[in-house]
Image (cartoon, rainbow, N blue to C red; front, side, top):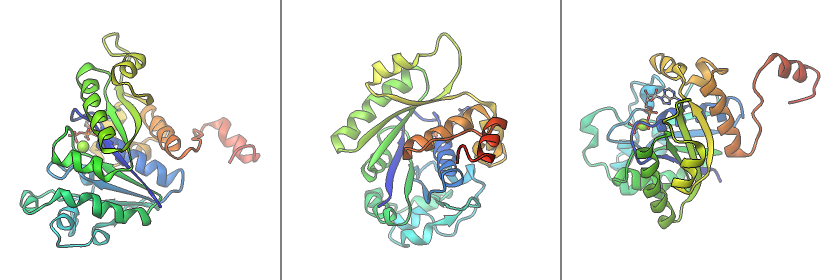
Length: 256
Ligand SMILES: Nc1ncnc2c1ncn2[C@@H]1O[C@H](COP(=O)(O)OP(=O)(O)OP(=O)(O)O)[C@@H](O)[C@H]1O
Ligand SMILES: [Mg+2]
């Protein structure tokens, strides 16, 4: 049975879609897992745009209107092992969408992949709530500032009430400014562990312009290394960065 992990935040624009695209790619490309990433942010869907998938005849919208089966909305990405379920980019496809069906349709994916990552909508509206309900575990994304951290507190409470296991927080777009909250401060405020800190990295924006996950565009960039690390943590495996030393060690069979 595959694990279904929701990627959520209270505040918008903190890096959920970026995380889903990159951790999904890292799990498939580096850790050789079978992964499905799903755009559950139906009203403002972005996942397909981040991956350069502009036309998908069947999307999650048709599944949630009862017009298609979830299996018909699964598309292969060019990274072996990674598949994508996009949401429609068209306004007219919102008509008739019933997000209360999400849990039932997502459950069907647990036989199809090792890991299913759900890209949630921000906040606690119907879409976000449906994504939490459809998840076995949730990872919260926050920036090192008070508003996004405070919003995690509410989402965390909701997850606990629903009975979904919180993995912790990924702190994103971290800089070195003194006005940022520290890891300790975020952990104390949110009462959740920070599982990883991802730095503010221009390569993420460069890769977005090229519609390619940064872990493919520049695997050695500071943000990419953290996305690989997070992917490894999720499945209890170690990520070993590709350096001259590790290549040498691999050549002599000292590491895998
Ligand atoms: N570590 C990072 N360094 C630099 N830019 C980043 C980083 N993470 C995300 N971004 C950029 O921040 C913007 C918002 O990211 P993203 O779309 O992933 O957020 P989101 O939480 O999914 O937003 P929404 O709530 O609207 O769905 C994007 O332009 C993305 O490229
Ligand atoms: Mg998003």
